[in-house]
Image (cartoon, rainbow, N blue to C red; front, top):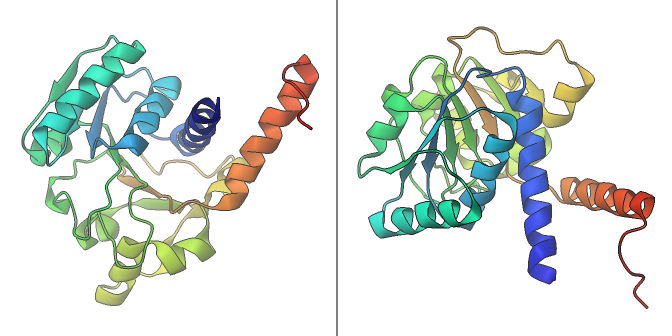
Amino acid sequence: MFDDCVFLNEVTDRSFKWNCYGKDGALDAKTLGVIGTGSMAFEQVLGVLAVRDIKDIILFNRTFERAVYFKEKLQAWGVTIPIQVVQDVQDVMQSADIVACSTRSNTPVFNGKDVQPGTHINGVGSFLPTIREVDVETITKADQIVVDDLASAKEEAGELIYAAEQSDWSFSNVAAQLNELIEYPNLIRPSDEAITFFKSVGTAYFDLAVARGIYAKAISLGFGQKMH
């Protein structure tokens, strides 16, 4: 029961993020690239599949066998589209329309030079100022950057903090926070060729909002049991 609740929270939260930022970007995306195949990546994939008509998935993990296991896990869950496991992260960056990056690497896991026009990158793995899975080149070449929470990003988003220290990029270049994509629907992807980056470090009030929404839905459906 507890594991089911945790999973529901994860997939709802991640899908919510993708649905908000992804609705105006990469609408015709067909290939999903996944860098890092840990537990968080599973919900990332399900979230993207929920809001995009993805035709194939490319997986990369530094430990190849873990990516193979991840593929099998997705297939067991019911994912039927083709899934390819590659041994070079460059293959992901050169082919994917959407890249889900979910690692805890202290150093960038792909080269910004390999980011193709029109790519959307979702970075959720790094959550400390010392961790940065995305390099400075990707940050500076991105046409639009959205964060889940700006105050938190300034304290915890290692790649953004590093870019602000080592380049001309600054946090004033952040286009919006997640909630602003709902409040200002005209804030859309600049062009089909634009490179966009969504950075999430995680905030507790998102979890609270998801829990409140689930609770309200359960009450309206008469579902669940009161606990004493």
